[in-house]
Length: 184
Image 1 (cartoon, rainbow, N blue to C red):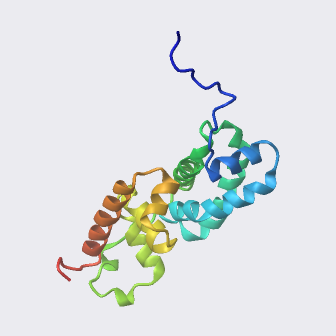
Image 2 (cartoon, one colour):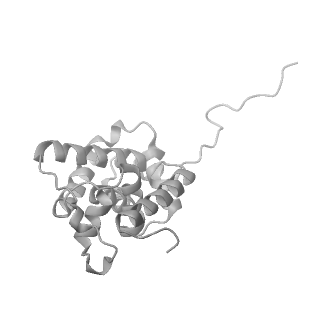
Image 3 (cartoon, rainbow, N blue to C red):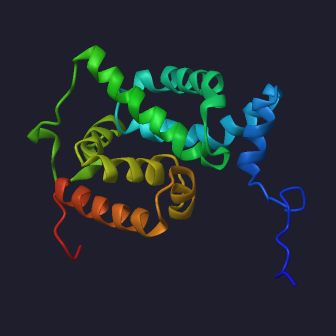
């Protein structure tokens, strides 16, 4: 007598995530489905780039990244990992941008003031960009792109706990750079 029979691959019902279904459809030639991936992940890519490159370069880079992703989609090993994959492409493209441009603007001390009413969006963004990578990226995705913590985790591949820590620590550093004291 033999033990319980294992189901064959033909009988196993593998449930794919909506993301994996879209990736599979695009790989199989339905390029119209790529628009849905774009709609889902453009805010993520935009936020990652906004945290790293000059604002006037972001929109063009977003388009370049998605064109690159479309061409290289067949190389994606885990179809359910499109979010972390395109996030990595965006981070790499931002690093490439800085390697090519060699023009980095530094945040100067005269931008730091406890009175934030005089800050414009560009100055605030430069202060956020002065934070460590993990904090600035999650802050931009939350504060600029409007993503929730769970959305950031799902799209970047980070754990929800890591996102919470990054947001908490990033906000603390941002408050310090803006001149706010603890308890305010």
